[in-house]
Amino acid sequence: MSSPTLSAPFFVDLHCHLDLYPNHLELIRECERLKIKTLSVTNTPSVWSRNKVSTASCEYVRPALGLHPQLAREREKELDLFEQYLSDTRYVGEVGLDGSPEFSDSWDAQQRVFRRILECCARETGKILTIHSRRAVRAVIDMVGAMLPPARGKTVLHWFTGTKQDARAAIEAGCYFSVNIRMLGSARGRELIRSIPPQLVLTETDGPFIRHKTGPVTPGDVVWVVRGLGELWGIDEGTVLKRISGNLKSLLS
Ligand code: MN
Picture 1 (cartoon, rainbow, N blue to C red):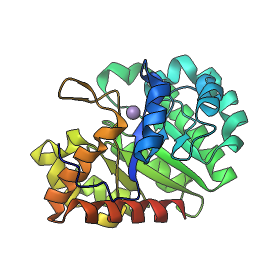
Picture 2 (cartoon, rainbow, N blue to C red; picture 1 turned 180 degrees about the vertical axis):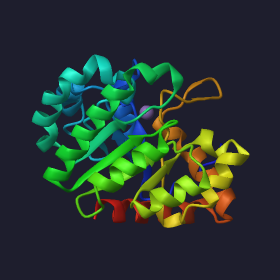
Picture 3 (cartoon, helix red, strand yellow; picture 1 turned 120 degrees about the vertical axis):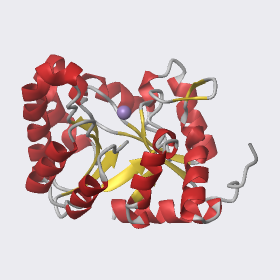
Picture 4 (cartoon, rainbow, N blue to C red; picture 1 turned 180 degrees about the horizontal axis):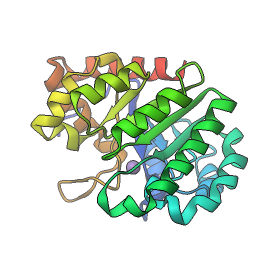
């Protein structure tokens, strides 16, 4: 593709599992070279320390401390570790709830885990959370709304698949949204993104869980999200990047 964005100060990939790629160290270097501000989310507290080490010298990559809802039952015992590491970082994810039938057995554990995570974050204040809410949007919004108001922490719903009404409830709870190419690839997804105020939108790849062309997406593929948002908003890609970097700034403020 052409490079319409070479003059951009930076890109944003607010949700990528860099540690799950076989060439993750190479990808960390690539994020630095391409100036992609990447939030490298993790799925269990036990991998936190090595992610912290592998990104320690980075200017653009930040690790996030997570406990993925799909692993809640197996990893609930790592909540103590989560709490122990939390003061190490401002960034938390991947966390949340998954209401898909295949994870219904762990629903109680998921709620216990997410509740404790929200409690800890509310107590420490100032955290930024990237949240999974597949088939559990209302439960996520209710818990966030009750336990982590914006004054105590910021929340970003990643790969949001709720309705427009759910989106309004999330906006009222103070949530941001990080969008990816899969959301932009469906009419329903585009319609949903159009219903979200542009100042609450951020970009993500959710690599390696999304495939694009020949293989899993990498943070560099965030350019496709920028392009898709430009088409959707009817603005050029440079303006999209300015908007996203402004949104990131307000998220971090
Ligand atoms: Mn993810």
